[in-house]
Length: 442
Image (cartoon, rainbow, N blue to C red; front, side, top):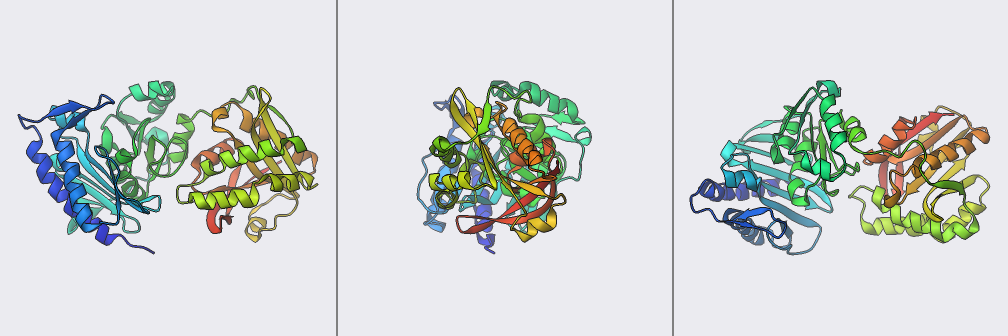
């Protein structure tokens, strides 16, 4: 297993230097404040701090890419440092001490080192994959931190930044419902919400709109503390443009409240059995949706290989000709927006055979809907039609495999009667992924 101890030590060196610079400019009478094109503030301290980090990385890690908030990305390759020189610039400008420098290393699409330094609070947090999460003033003066063990929302503490973003996203009512469900809510805001989750002082933190540089450093710290960090779509890490961080126990409960599910009334989609004329359309939907359900650790090359091997028009022609399979399509206004495939018979995978409890069985092999039709009811209609076919075929149970990192799909299946009964391995483009096996009786 790759270790990142040297990179973590370098992150501390960078943070030490930046802390001195930012503290000199904090509450300075001659602080220069400007507005960026997006109307957010930037100070001379923001730019100087990022320039300092970039200069040090150029000397210490010349082969690594660097991405920051204030300047263009430089370099290429699988290793990328992501920097937010001052997270909480508005606080910095107003003299509020809740701001921090965020330093992250992403390796092959996964945040593996994170450091958050808040010198005005005299606090620092850090983590590297496999090394735990820590807080203190230095590596030699630190204590390990762990997320809480709270399992019920009514016992949970929630932190957020503001309500306006939830309103703009159309989720204000959902977020207010979440707040009402929790024991306690406070707007600690910005990085601090997530560090309190990692420390176990807060159980849930969420924001509806964030950039990668706002989140990358937070992810390893929350995860190494035993928590979960995803987007509202359930995708792991900092790639969804928004964030939900929890102690892990509460994650699915929070996502279920914040993410609109398919309309149970069924919406305007029509579901029918696929025909030969649908093959190219179904293959198009399959190619457009498979990668969206994959965790960021699955490279585009692996996704492409899987689509070529399993989801090509030629393969769908084979599926339609197989009497043990059923391919369904969901249409909206005459356009195919989703599909499902079911496979009757005893599973070939030994792990699945050992896990499932109801026989005869049918596999829900695939069910995907184009993003523009999420929430339309199409996924639920496909599931209901597939469930009906399985029952009519004499099956006593319906099972599926779902990537262990795909929280959104797990939430959908759980809400529709599936339960986790085991695990299995799933090959994507020549490499193995971990799936949950989920099942429901018919």
